[in-house]
Amino acid sequence: TIKPNRMYNGKSDVTDAFISELKKGSINSSGFTAEDVEAHSVNLDFTTGHFKAQAYNLEYEDTTGTTIAAGTHADKNVGKDKPVKFTGSIDFSGDDAANYYFNNASLSNITGTATITKAPLYLKINKTRADAKIYDGTDAVLDLAMKQTGTTRPNITLNKDNYAPASTVPSPTHHKGEIMLDDGDNPDDVDLTQVTDPTYTDTTGAKQIHVGDHKLQYKNVGLRGADAGNYDLYLPPIPAVGNGNKVVGNTVYLDGKIIAREITRDSFKVYDRGTNAEVTAEKVYDGNATYTPGGGVYLSTNAPASGNVGIVTRDQGHITFALTGDKGTFKDAAGANSTKNVAEARKIAYNVTGVADTHTDSDGIGHKLDDYYVLDADGVTKHSLSSAFDATGQGRITPKALTATVVNNHITKVYDAKQNQTDGNRNDIIGDALVTLSGFVSGETRTNTSTAMYASPNVAWDNTANAPTSQTVTYTAKFDRGTGAEADNYTLDTTAHTTTVTNSASVSGSYTGTITPRDLKLTFGDVTKVYDGTADNATKNVTALDDGLSGAVTTADGTTAAGISAAALSSVTSSYGDFSGTTFNANRNAGSRAVEYVGLAGALGTNHNYAIADKQYGKGTITRRRIDPSGF
Image: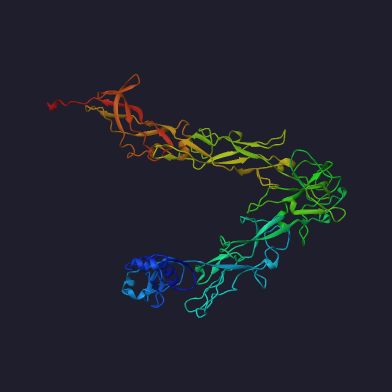
């Protein structure tokens, strides 16, 4: 079997590949004399007899779902170990050719397969580096010359400069990256897919929006068309040796740069403190009315973006301006009264330094001061937002976020028909015993009313282990806000720079708890029977339940003595007897007796909220049996 490899050329003919393999000795010929072999006076001739090898299809399923067997028709396409069929004959050439005869019927004994590998095609890229973009908070590329859509000429196209020569061309010249012609000299159906417009990324494809040198990522860079599977796509330029760099992951990276955006000084609304004009600046509540401002000025932190200047939308509320210099005082809305409280603080004066918070968007990208600059007084020198400059604006105090910490990852209690955590006797446990609240300003506190709630008020039961098992517990951090001006100073919302005041929030994390069965005693009605020679008791009548809380638990969940059915007691054994110390001994004789009940543990069936002692005791009487004299 001969198995040559050749690169895809649009043709099903693989004769040259087979002749090359035959001449390399892939098939043995017997019958040549040693002298002729040594003298090279006889050779195989593949031309005279029009020897031809043609590749055929591998097995596939057509568009109707019909399986087409391998070797059904000639096939030009790429594939591994494709079946090959032979026609024509093999002759001899050389001085001693006439001394030999080749039985061409033996060609039918030659079997072969051929592997056709993909041919290279190349991209054409018009512009490899984008014009610098002023930071706009997005990864969008604005240079039209770099785009694929909305422009008269896409930046990336398929290089179609060369097509394979027609089969009628004598001594054809081939070019690397040419588009092949089929057996009928028709050009292959292959073109570039709809490549996406580029975005700014790093070399791994991660979205980039900040100032700096970046990559421009083009996606969906591949081939389409009926013959696309016969080619691999490569980046330009076309190399003299080898195929060059293949397009990996249908992605191409070019180059670009994002430069800083200007913040103009007049984009901040500046007012004298005496005018009480509204501005925006903030601090987290710290228990005092002071801030660290410049001398009596106000600043707007939300100057809208316009053209190529100003804070862009994605950064508004995340890039703010901290106060430096002399201390200032927060005022109420009227500007008359100093206040330390979130609910009252509205205005402030300061000198400003830019601050970026820790917020990240859905792509995990944060906010950077380096994306902006402000011009110095000379109108030329670029001043970093990270150092102070004068401005004025509004002010506010935002609530201080408290940290809620669960005390115990796993809690327990005895079943008492309540879903929340209790002492097992229906007394609620709340506050510091469950969740600690930290982060209060020194000398301040709030009443902690945090709770823990089991997934179910019932005992979770592991039937395999025949024991109670854990269940999910949800913790809710809560505190009493208080009343008046100080009611908004703390929050459980941990979002950076939050203005939301909430005094109730779920505590994140995975927590569990176990509710254990509650001991339940059964009271049996007094029984009696006439002496019958046995200690057996057949009467089992539960008259009352004792949950240890005077019925508070059984009343809450509706468990009653009447609910313990005769069927549930059918497997219970009972006998009359007496105690010797703590030992019960059966006694069949007449008289007042203790009555033992055994097998009570399962009396409530699948209700595992209660644990019933397997042995319990009641009272009973065996009366004497009358002997009738007439019976003698």
